[in-house]
Image 1 (cartoon, helix red, strand yellow):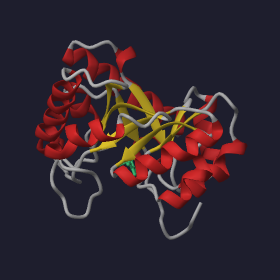
Image 2 (cartoon, rainbow, N blue to C red):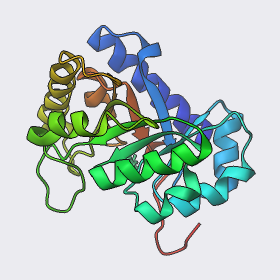
Image 3 (cartoon, helix red, strand yellow):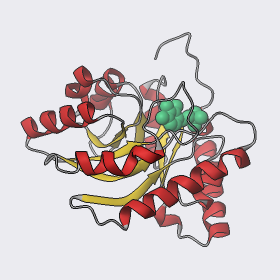
Length: 232
Ligand SMILES: *Cc1c(COP(=O)(O)O)cnc(C)c1O
């Protein structure tokens, strides 16, 4: 089933790229495997998935040794400072930086390992109270402030759009995130490279790609519905 799901998602990604006049190579599919058991991750790996996304640091840490070393792990969920140590040397990117204190703590942990960690800044485009992320208005100043940290590298923006049955409702949020990204890129801030836009989930990734997503985070569409009553 995972094989067919993955093929379907890749086909829809290709079609969305085609509609937008973009190359499929510009879009990275992240298989969001949170709550799913290792067997399912391996099944996805066996049919070609290499980018995996987790939203809990301990879960990422626990799954890490069970997967081949050419897997790229993305930390996509809210991160508490005391949990950075679980994942700092395991992830290729942290998508969810939303405070200076968090950025500083990531910088410090990365420094201990002698590495520089690519990060995205999480922006709350719809202003939802329930969501993490900084406001669009704060974003440029925030990026200027954290850009001086030597062991992180700001590489773009991420957003989690509202849950909706109609993905068209999220199109303006995706379009505005792209606009914000381009605006900040044009400021040529040292040590900042605004090339990545992590936006779009199972319900709205095609619209996100049409609006410029370079990374889409798809869980349900690949692995099926999550059951939060039994912990993976
Ligand atoms: C769970 C999650 C996803 C994937 O959600 P689906 O709707 O299952 O595709 C994407 N991004 C983040 C940050 C998530 O926590």
